[in-house]
Length: 265
Image (cartoon, rainbow, N blue to C red):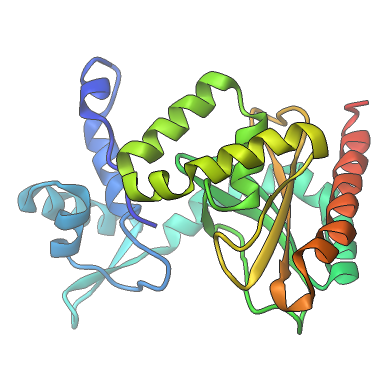
């Protein structure tokens, strides 16, 4: 996932904003899926920071355990402190433990992957996932980022997010990924509109041509997070219409069951 540099105009107006801390986090966010090592040159390119600033930050992050220096390659790997930092967040999301048995049951019924996610800036992030074993080509996992405009999960978030927050996120996508925004914004908004009638959002392969996705948001936030349940089905399993008729109602039912368990109704 590409690092998303901060808006300097906005942060300069905030006297409490710790710019050095933010720059260090930008370094850690520079890694993309499949990348094991990065050097200072890549950090400079991806963050826009100077070489001297990057050198100081990487040295500090190595000292704290967030990066590990590979002396042979003269590059850096993410350190175990990054993983331990995220553990308390996941462990305290009790909805994961609550939903896990129902997610597993639905994944086995459908031959797909059932996941739970939240928004992180301009991406959706998996915080729990259950998948059937041999029918899946895709392998979603905890921490995996997904685009908002082209995924059912992202569209479901847009459908339930507060209007001001939704506008802000859409504007960030428009600025940071203008071509992606131009290509997929209209389809995403059509899915948001369809949610009002059908109570779920979908994608027909816009994100991945080999996967159909369906997603349903909880009706209210839990611990300040708007959680989204998603079910991805291999397109090879059948026609989109047939998969939609089978999977979407089951996913809606799963979410309503979770809401009852949470005391929403």
